[in-house]
Length: 364
Image (cartoon, rainbow, N blue to C red):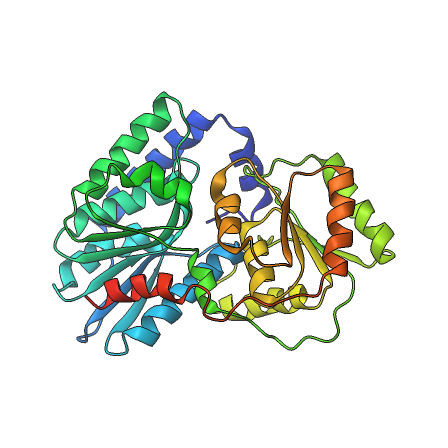
């Protein structure tokens, strides 16, 4: 929630992992107790309701794009439902009130992403709480990545998550990569599916930017980033040589909070930028997905876990998306190949059957 604040980012990146987990637990307990003593009320209306829980309230445009696509899918396919978005930071604020007002025909949907695990532990705790609190409602978890470290704590937390999922008889769980699906599916008794990241459901995006020119770098600067400043300089200098210094640096995670009111404007601003360049280099999962949807040639630098690689596997046959291990020769050779290749845009309905699985679960 506060990742746009530099001091918070610094603390999160430098305190011991066990301490971060402990502090998150304490904060969640304090927040739960506060809203138990001071319950919050909200009017939900009399029509059938579809709740979008764990919605994005922070500075990550990739997550905002997932929420945007998620809500768009529900509104298109369930016109008779009122859609209520509850920000992840408001989960404990309103969950008790939702529990008191929800009816059997109402649907709970959980935002997808890459946070089943302990890296984003707040979201993991909230998701478990929601599943346990609503045993009589259909719950649809939009496409997720699963990543638990292979250590004592990781294995323990994985077992807890499995037990929570298996406690719900009407849970539909979607996983967005084959590694996650294999990791968890043989222990799940709920309905489980393999589907790409929900942002792909937006299909081809055309903003209408002017003629493409220059290059764009979109690199991580967080706990999932693996590239050193020297490696980032290599990427930048290599592009400068090719594009005569016409190189822009950006990130899909901003230095400021993005509200739901500003979501669409901020997304379109980023999409316009990506559509305007001749080449993009990124280690951001949604940087890659945006490039695929916009038809922008993109070189993807592999990361330490299967989140990014798992989504690349869905689009590896696109002739303008490349995934490499970073070294100078591979980088230069792939830049040349990307610039020499005529882009063949992705099929608008490339994943239609996959996403129809989510629609079918919404309409059960």
